[in-house]
Image 1 (cartoon, rainbow, N blue to C red):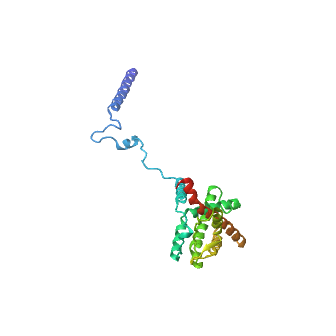
Image 2 (cartoon, helix red, strand yellow; image 1 turned 45 degrees about the horizontal axis):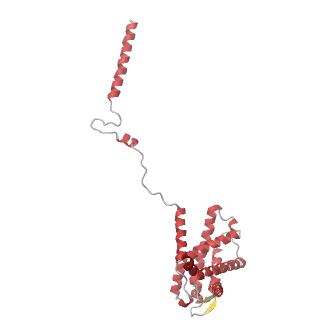
Length: 261
């Protein structure tokens, strides 16, 4: 009797296993259509291949800055040369203001900020603990020097020339011999034209340097204040301007002779 029961239970279990295999074989798969419904959308989305969106990667800031610098260098090389003394015409206050606006974004302003940054590093000012270290510290120094130069441009190109009736522009003198021409270019930091066509001490330039230094003392951290730093700033800026006047005087000749432009 027990043997018979065992045989019956064994046959029942085998039949149940065969039935389950048959159901699984006949059942639709998850990706096959179910009667009247179609494929499972959730499974289809899950099994769909991943496609990256066709979005152009943003231009790195470094590349943008590189393009800006390249543009400024190109403008400085191919820019219109400074006028000659034969082309001089007096400026009105409105025209001097236009000169100031043009100078705010000229390559010379950005180049002067870079020169001032190099001068500060030579003097050890980059060791000031008020600034951060590394690339961020260099950026902070350059930003402050650029702000100081923009302030100087306002005083130099518009305010003091208007008040003192002096011309803020530089005029080339290509008819002079080489050495007299070089001396003329360097002397223009101390001598300028007046609105009536005469020559006078370039007080508008001296005052603009001093005024921009005084203003920068209000927001530049860790800077020495007083007459000695102002005098040092005036001396450095005048030497820098003398070198730039030499460049403005002779660059059109160099460009025409060697670059054929």
